[in-house]
Length: 266
Image 1 (cartoon, rainbow, N blue to C red):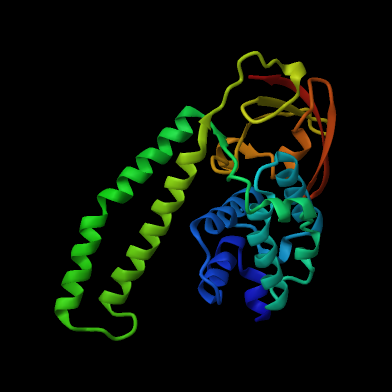
Image 2: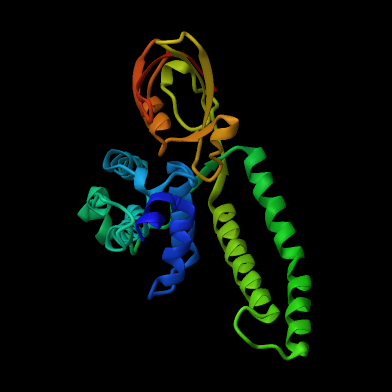
């Protein structure tokens, strides 16, 4: 267990959690766990998760409104699992603060909309179409495996059924996301409005004078490797609401970094 604690990343930890969960989580809970992983960093080691990172993510969810309990409930339970299994030395779940009003309202509040770029929406549509087109092939694999008569553990039949389950779960997740996705509307917004989803922000590192560009997106579209970050990430949270000339500081593995907002464009 010590070795696992040191090297298990967030994405794998969520996989372990889902496999060992006593209750079957719905597609919405799966989506929120995946959203959390993308925002925090799916490859980030669970041992490196800190209370401030978790608290910032939760605060951004609360500030976004909508079904707060529905979004943060699965995250809180997952973080409690990490502590229970000794995968984290921090009691991270305690830093997910869910307002009581949102708990009472969660049953009657519809799942919030997701602002996405048109290219992001089209990418998800393409993925959904691709997965649906695989259904017939997967069904054929299951039939062929059944015909072989090997029903032992880890047999081809077991593998085909697992693939079918994963595919159908992703299809449900994509369908839910697309049903709530709306194109980002930045008409009338200017840099003085403050950075928000849909903004392109140029930062200047105050130590190196180097410039870096980020695009603020919903966590569904987040991809740090291409400069797309969500408001739930440390950098995105620091940028949110800021205008040209503002200075921010962000916690990084090498320490606190200081930046100046060079421009905010929509």
